[in-house]
Image 1 (cartoon, helix red, strand yellow):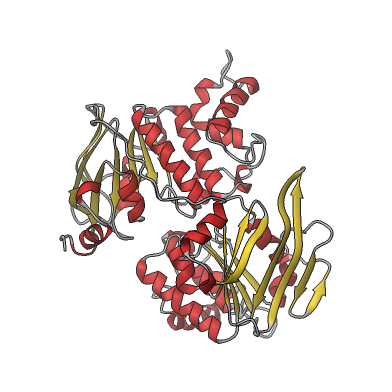
Image 2: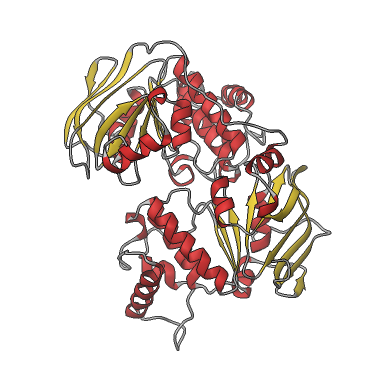
Length: 501
């Protein structure tokens, strides 16, 4: 494998922002026909290194950047794309108000005259999608697709560009098992044609499944790098976090308290049948199921994003009507969405603004205006308590790592003290250390009076944090169980068929 030609190499890459070192002498070599996994905790420097690779950020002086045999002093995103480098960021960078065909067409060679006819864009997209095994309507607007489908469109766009180096940042974070299998096939085809792939993932089983080589980043430095066969999972975890760690239980102790949420015969969009459930104080209820089972749709209805077709919702024993998210917040319902970057974090606004937005009553003065000193006190309290990094309340929340963004969203609702908190995929795209912290935060919320409803596809997570487990299939809750009564295999069997093995 080491004899394969080098496509891109980054050497002695450092990056400092306002005195904070994000990268320190990092090296990365991408070879033809090789999948190079890049792993590390959130905030380890992975995203910054990839932005430098793509030309979106410039390294500090002293770095050496070589693209396809030519050393370059500086590059920008347009140059790297023309050179043959394509980066699929976690936020996907798609145009939601344009069609699938139009999003795919931006990276294709233009026809004579510099423009494509619309029919050509659609024909090209149809051919590409069929080749990749994606049964999508090329004329559909991207905003109408699920997050997993948008992820696959972003991957298809990188393939369409005929890039020689493709960076995939958490590419399976929202994919179904069938889509993951398709992605693996795409990666195999890219590897066979000689492309170099950087594969960033917090799912180590994926890393061992698909990677040829792995590099571990910690605190901005490459701690170790080599063939994947030279490592065990435990060794990679130890390198990532600087200590050996295990997936810890974060279940609440004691009996459930008062009933906070009761859903009765609720019929939501796309569901084949009504849903009934309860959530109490001092418990975490996990709602699991395959992608498309109706979990997120149920959460959207409870939070007032989409109306119910039938049924009743009660909070603290009182039947309520939740017609909008604003009403939900007034009723004491909080919601952390699956796509935190697009639907949760207000990018372009400070951590303090993001954190305090649901608890404005605690920051207002006599004339109902935000008092900066009150906002600063509230923000500082939760930044310190949740160890949000960097600890700079004025920094753009959109620039934080995924784990720290999730902490900001949880801090937002901790400050608001909701009666019910719904968290959709709480640790999606988050490193092992941050997962443990998020789980402990959810446990703390449940033990201090907030009823917590967690939606998760990660069965080890479900077993680690849930007091009760509800399994959804085709829009219905088909089973209720507990961690003590369940295994990953038994829950998966319920998700697939509604029956225990």
